[in-house]
Length: 172
Image 1 (cartoon, one colour):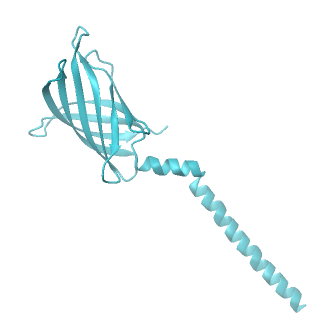
Image 2 (cartoon, rainbow, N blue to C red):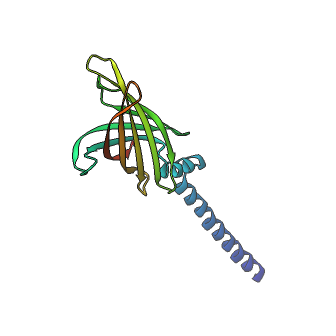
């Protein structure tokens, strides 16, 4: 009788340990998702990879006062390329460029180039925008400061400007 009682206690303890351990594994799996989803989520949190909607504010470089603005969309690809899409205009093309991580975990920079046209559609030069980005801790928004150069057809800088931007990650 004593041996049977001991077996019942050991069996109950073993079952309880399996239940607790199994529940822990199940809960862990539910919280973390599939390994590839976890990796993608972690990478996204501290990367620019993805699609972003930005509000750009053009600023007076001396005073910092706002002088205009526009919205754009940026697509950052793995490997360091980017595409800037703006509202349709006859005066400039969308931008293409490169991005990279800087020294801090949430610090990035990118630069993109676009072509400029006059009102008749003739090519009159290009523009280059250089941006410093600070990604927030969620990985779903950033703030940025930028400079831009207006370049003529011969490659000479004919004007420069400054801007700030805030952006949010596109969430499907």
